[in-house]
Image (cartoon, rainbow, N blue to C red):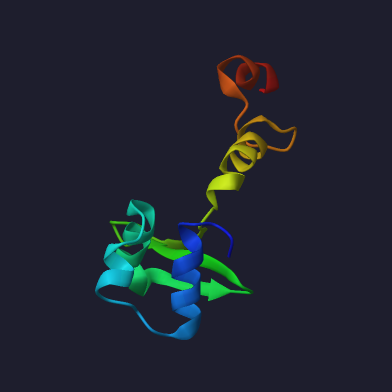
Length: 96
């Protein structure tokens, strides 16, 4: 809710009203991008997700919209933690 890009979209989605005019146009570029994705956005347990469908229609999944303040931490956890799936060029051969 506190994220300046995602917060407005979350508020608008919760209200059920897609804004038009000044309130949408005066938003940040990121908020306008999310506004363009309006029909693919859903709220689950107070968190905003994007329904993402593969171009070849072979599958779909939901993407959590990450607040700007959390992006570095999430990237760190997904790529550098002990439980992450990405080990890098050097460590991958060592694990096989």
